[in-house]
Figure 1 (cartoon, rainbow, N blue to C red):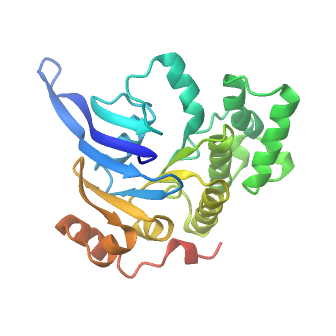
Figure 2: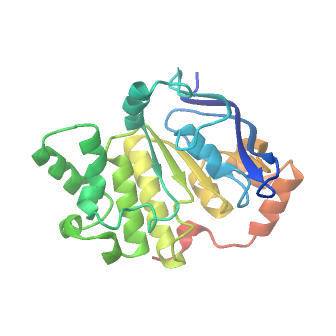
Amino acid sequence: MAFVEVAGLVKTFERRQALWGRPSLIRAVDGVSFTIDEGETFGLVGESGCGKTTTARCLLRLVEPTAGSFRLRGEEVFGLPAARLRRLRRDMQMVFQDPGSSLNPRMTAGAIVEEGLVIHALGSPAERRERVRELLDLVGLDTGAASRYPREFSGGQRQRIGIARALALRPAFLVADEPVSALDLSVQAQVVNLLMDLQQRFGLTLLLVAHDLRLVRHLCTRVAVMHRGRIVETGSAGTVFRTPAHPYTRALVSASAGLEPVTSIQP
């Protein structure tokens, strides 16, 4: 049994053409299925608007799916009652694309990282503060960072705060949604290397959502390619990128040919 099992995932949105017109249904995600083994880094790739971020948000039920199944460790996540879903959220967390908009500007970095521990009533205040210090150190931020606000950090540092927040509850399943696309090239490699180190250190099962094939090629063991809401090709990263079978995949690979690998960019 796979650690993560997604089957027939569908998400539709209503769109109104005019104020009094009948709404039409848009299938952002159309029957997506894939599995991820425990401890694996799995890539979900495709151009902007293909449905990959909506897929990721459905899995964590940040967006409610229209149909389909998602099992984590064999337990069906869709349809769980609120109390059980709340407990399960400790096992699945997300690193968001834009570290600027995903962090509350009115909270200090320490409060942002601690928030999940407070919500789930984990540890005493002193134990939570110590956990925050450990996490900030883990992602390469100094101890003084806890008392500073997001606006006082660079983009790369804000993403490190987001990663620390995601790790605070010791999740088993981590979703990273375009984790470096909003960052300058000069800091992308730093964040990529940090994610690689953390995944290996904690044995995280990682779903990497990205349009950058350079990033996926270096981080992922297997990959699924999305196009217009559907998965058109799945396989090992090496096979998919060396000998792509679907025309859309071939176009993606061709477009990325010759680009410098993210991990070779100097910090």
